[in-house]
Image 1 (cartoon, helix red, strand yellow):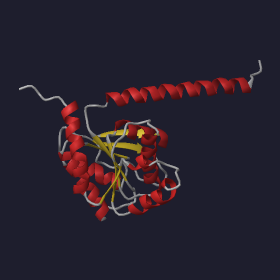
Image 2 (image 1 turned 90 degrees about the horizontal axis):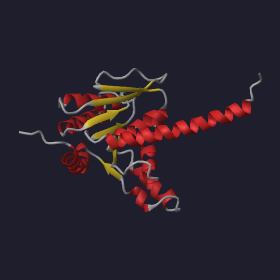
Image 3 (image 1 turned 90 degrees about the vertical axis):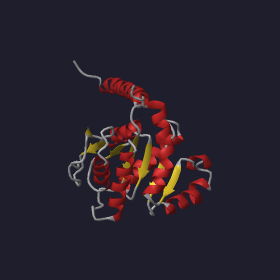
Image 4 (image 1 turned 60 degrees about the horizontal axis):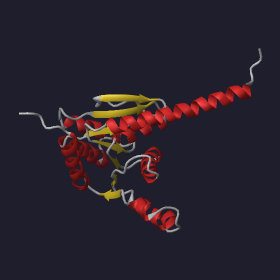
Length: 230
């Protein structure tokens, strides 16, 4: 019996679209259930060594956030990711976790050893979607193409309303030039709206990041974290 390849492809395509819709619905439901822990995703380069000031800055940021009861989420690898996870564990807060969303790459080492929770991903798309699903704020540090992808993916999903608005904090000195270009080119030419810039904050220090996030962390805890009965 011959197989009608065109018919099979049509059926498979339809089932793939249905599956995508199911996954999107599941992600939406899981997002609504993620109310117990405030989480900050830290994006940044795997190529930054532990002697770098940027590495130390990320470690300090994660440590300070851990002391405030915030989970830290990274890509689980070396560099900035390691610094974030290491700082989170150093905070030694039993109420918080150091989380790594790992992906295997041919040019990157295995996951760092400072993870309380590790989720492995086969594709960048599923990994990015989990970052979006479990994070309440995003801090972007120095990085290359992967870091830029994570930044713009977050920004774009907020723009189109696929995820709830959340702070995007660009930490360090590599970002002002990018925002200047954004205002000069796409914004000035009407290719984006002034309101699209509202979630973006540039910070130069850990203290600035903490100052920006702490009111939201406090509000989240007041709304979602139950007070133990005496």
